[in-house]
Image (cartoon, rainbow, N blue to C red; front, side):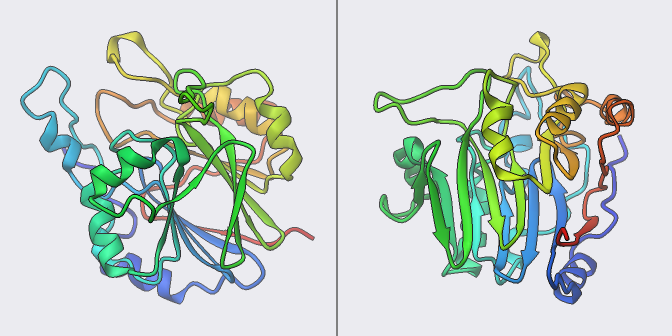
Length: 283
């Protein structure tokens, strides 16, 4: 199978990131799966990067091979000047040691935002000090160099809490000056979700569209029509799909997402891996 080639990768992508001037808005690049780089006046944030072949190697000789569909956009050690990186939950495509360890090494002052419920797991996987990650739970927020991160529950497949009531799966609303970006992490719809998100005046919603199918034997996500509907319900200024075109066994095309957005009159953009989105500040 011929791999999908990113529209920009490695040196070309790095040059585009360096040249980007976000001004009063933000610049966003899709790095594949659920990984997005955000550049703004407040700094640079990396959402849930998966920039390795660790899952392909791990499952190569099993009945659930993670066959890669898209070429790697960039190696994690190439990224510099990253202020914040997130992990929404413990699944490897959202908490990958082969991505995060070289990223942290290259960016020693970086802050890693995680669900507080996952602290021990994260420290063990990354071989980092237990007290180093920045833990957060739903309803809480943390400010890191003028970058505000708010935690929203995620249902993957349900809202799962530890024995202290803290969510193991989160989405994050990033507040960057007057711009708000919602990265849902992996999630299904749940009661009260739109109401919680409606408080934030979301400019950009980043939502998974690979859906949920029992034959995959993995936790699922929104389908494209559900992602479009959620974006519409929360009056998102723009919605971008993710979590597809990475593994052959767990993907869906964006066709349903696009058709649903068009039917609802929801502003949307389908990015190619490595492509840049310039989001201007709202008036």
